[in-house]
Image (tube, rainbow, N blue to C red):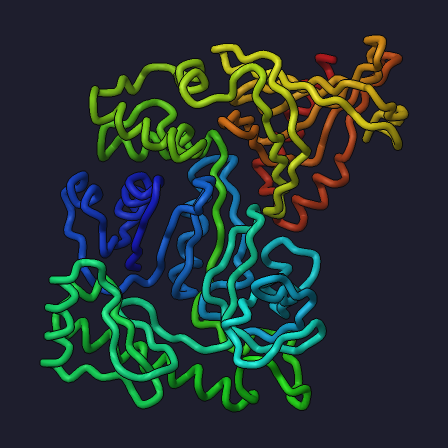
Amino acid sequence: MKARVRGIYATALTETLLDAGHEVVDASAPIRRRFDAEFGSEPPDVRIATTDDRQGVGVHGDPDAVGSLRDLLTDAGLDALAWTDPTPPGTVLDGEVTETLGGGAVVRLRVGDAGTAAGGSAETAEGYLPYGGVDDRVETGDPVRVQVRESAAPWTDRRPELDGALRAGGGLVALEPGSGTRVDVRNDEAARELSGMLDLLGLEPPEGWRAVWKPPAVDADTEELQAGLDRAVAAADGLDAAVDAAGGVGVLDGSDPVRDEPLATPNAGFWAWFGRESRFALDDRRREATATMPGHHRVKAGSADASAGVDLAEALCEPDADAAFPFGVVTDAFGPAEGDALRLDHGKPDGRLITLGEAAVTAVDADGSVTVEREMTGGGTYDGLDVPREAGDVAETSLKEGRWWYPTTYRGRDGTVRGTYVNICTPVEVFPDAARYVDLHVDVVKRPDGTVERVDDDELREAEAAGTVPEPLAEKARSVASALENAL
């Protein structure tokens, strides 16, 4: 299997892939410097790219290749989780417009079994269709047939981007509606050289399609260029045949049946999220190839500025691999600091992310402890405590980097303790703007009268049976809950 890898996890994942006997192609310059290996220029079977928020990676490409990588990536650590992507790029789907926005429409897509495989409760997913992606006016309730241009990780607030026109291929060359040839290479000299080579070889797209040659084509030989175009043409022919038989793409006229399953699935994909333990395990993998500071991936995942700071630190001095993670130094440089607002990013085992609101940071210690407070609004009761929530109550949450749990204590205006809720989760990470973890369902509560109860074991059992919480992670959650139940 040939893989192309990009982003902050590239070195660690390249080490992992090579050790597993896979090939890495179209390697970046830093990867070529760090490894004593041959890196080809052939089109990859699968692409691995770090998500924009640096929390994990998206893996997309040939279905067999993608399937072979899922276990390899989640083996990074106990808190590495993966979810099937129900809308991998290139997929052609039917859907219905549910909302029109300023620049495009929200579409409920019929993704079939992929929806439940991704951890969802229904066989649908949402996508975003820019108005420029279709020729006709789009209204709420319109049936549409669209192709996924760009997918989105389940923990982000983005929707997959859709288009009402087809595109095929994408390794060395992609084919899109139109005519002629375009070279999508930023280096003008390389682009001219590639254009000349294409003219010399007579590599023209079929009628009705425009060829868009990608940067990897610059380093490809003549046989690879021809093979890349042949693959793109075959993919385009297959798409054309399937779509024409179904009645075309774009806004449907209502006479064609709306399909519950994807019309074409040239690619498969999944999203892998790395927790704190997994990031440190990836540090160890990266260290086999190059100097790596303790907490390399943990710091880089926090912010773009922190990522650049890691690069500078490792370039200036040789990191001590046995040193402790410098939490105090990192927070002093990048935050959070006392007085800052910190989000509580509450990940769910099915891949979703729920933000529990912002809290004010009241204390930060170099040992990894961060305390935050929120003032509560009135109404309802506190989950698990069965205690009324009153306006002016204060919730104090004690976070500690790397701990598999955190407590929130609720107090009334007069300081009376109204109860404590202890959340069991993957190891807490305190980034500059947010504390991040994945909730593991089971929790422990301590009521005002001092009674202690373990709650939501049934939810953990259901998640384990559904496959969203792997058995070893579920057992860890139960172990932590039992220890806390006894300690409280």
